[in-house]
Length: 223
Length: 212
Image 1: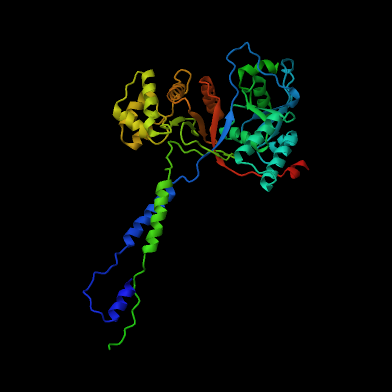
Image 2: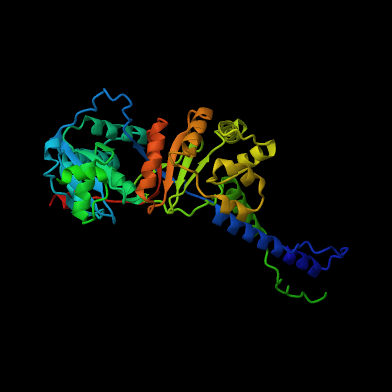
């Protein structure tokens, strides 16, 4: 704009002197920079992510038997102290309290609990993986909603994978809890739930981790 | 004819396009922004692969801090006119025979972050204007079996807003004992479905490699 006016002057046309059309915009730009920086820093662009979990309902009526699950498919995972994980298959019957099964120790790394879960859940995981590949490669075309639905259908139809019971020793952390639930999702485990730790399992963890027994309820099993 | 002067270069840079652009960016940010609320306790959430996002409305969030304090936050409902927050506080006041003034209710309605104040100190908390005093009063909601205010809060929240979804936002280092206690309290109030707030972290599994 300034150039045009100067050219007009150069052309020799006589005009009343005008005020410069320029407004100094520097302070405005400064202010806008500040505001933009402020908003960019305070904005939470991505919303927090959530992981859903359903806990088993408490049986208020003591006469109702809890659902039976087959011991051969059961896998018990106990969250231990110091980010350790313990697991044992099957169940412990009351007559075995004096002779508790040994706990296997593992951890949350990719070579820890994950191969174990995948090994036991191989057929279901393969089905889900194949299905996802087909969706990604475009062999199956469906809406994201139906993809999630189909995967949960695959999971609910499954009857080969393990039934994982997650228990937590009192020294575990919330991070461990979320990590193990995340591991269930990663490995596509169909059936898992979080249950209260039994007194004999407390003893087993304390024995495996080398902590002095604290729970008074654990004493009968020590005899 | 006078000599044609070469126009000297103007020292001004035309800032109009720049200002235009800034205005657009600023407007965009102002319209899309959801302010990040300061929490009463810093919390590092654990990571997961879940990609679901938090609901916009009808939530109550339990904040479990590293030092085992429990804080609670809930929204005003899908429409701020519903004003669930003051209603919940009135319900809560009834249980402990505390009457809150309109000013206190309005203050509670717009208080942006989680609250961890024992109900008997709530009046004092809402009346004080000093942020430092307020922070000092955030000692966590009592969850002992003798003074289980968290259960009352959950009960009041659910009676005012039946569609409320429970969310748990905990620090990765929070001890499990307090988590278990909170889960038990929720189970007592028939809340079995939770959303655990996590940070996204991608995990890739190579099936063939693991099967080796």
